[in-house]
Figure 1 (spheres, helix red, strand yellow):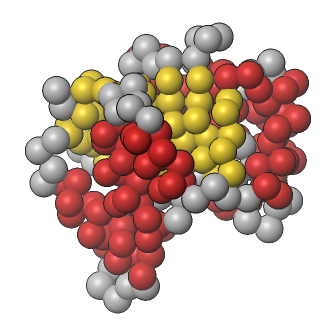
Figure 2 (cartoon, protein in one colour):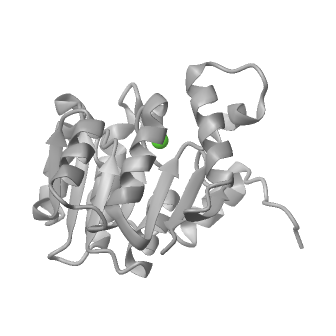
Length: 220
Ligand code: CA
């Protein structure tokens, strides 16, 4: 029995994947296509994607937000978990990166569930708030530039309904959040982790999956 989280060596990680991973063929293909990308480390792990898909279904999400699309694996994963009339507002600034994923979204038959908006995400989220969409979303995934995480979080907290869920990626940041000396991105994550810990507006869990995944459920 373990009272803390297991350290996964390669063999145990392989076992975990072999005994739980259920990827759509287009998810596997997109992951493969992204493997050679110079910034491939920005892609979430498939087991994290599967957890997020489960959370989307558990919350009965119909409307979701993604901040930070990269090549589109997580967007594909969330879109596959939504009902057919569900919608994912996918925010990114890179035409080049998101273009990698779009053919996979189409081949998986979920492109119509994804609304990709190429613009700074703070602007996109502010526009949705100004359009009266506060409380209109069920799920949000934040996985973009760390300096703006707090801004994305505050906007998503208004956009998701009470009971809705916000997932924030990279909150353990390769372990650097626990170190003293820190660059700006690390400091931004340290500040946000401290804030979330004491934030009475949410229920909270920080999972040591991938690079750290914080789950924040908006309280009523
Ligand atoms: Ca990430």
